[in-house]
Each structure stands twice: as C-alpha cells, then as structure tokens.
Length: 122
Image (cartoon, rainbow, N blue to C red; front, side, top):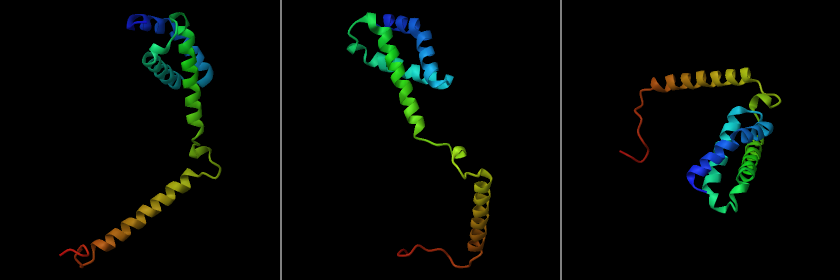
C-alpha cells in the first residue's frame, strides 16, 4: 500500500474510527489524539499488514488499543479535588503564610551588616 492509498483508506475509515474512539473515551480531545496516534503507528507499521483488505479492521484495532492506553494512563492519577480531605482554601492560606514568613526572614537578613562570604574562599 503506497501513501496515496493509505491516505484514502484512512479518510474512508475516519468516521468509523471516531465512533469507536468516542464510545470508549467519551472525550473529543482524547478521541482526536488517539486517532492521530493510531494513524501514525499504522503508517510506521504498514509493512506488517498482510493484506490491504484488512486495513480498516487493523486500524480500528490500533485505535482501540490506543484508547485503552489512554484510559490506563489516566487511572494512574487522582485529581487533588477528588482526594478526601483536600481543601484548596487551606492549602492556599498555608502557602501564603509561608511566603509571608520567608519574606520577613529575607528582610531581616538584608538588614545584617555582615558581608556574605563563601566558606573556604577568600
């Protein structure tokens, strides 16, 4: 399969690929990313396709695998807002208090008359 036939086959399968990705991911941005990755992988591995008549099935399987890869990757992370006991206002207040404390320490250091020298250097 040459580049032109590849492009035509991808365009013919585009609607079907989107429906498969959307049924698994439910997110348009993830679907678009998945389909792009699948098309790239298919193009790179085009030499292992045994017969052109199985192209759409083969590409659909790659899209499905990419969808499940995104799902597995997303399950590794938990949003802080979903974490029990998370209070964004309390964290912001603590950060602000720390910055204020650091600023006060820095102001006190700036008022010292001792010149800063690096130990071991003249």
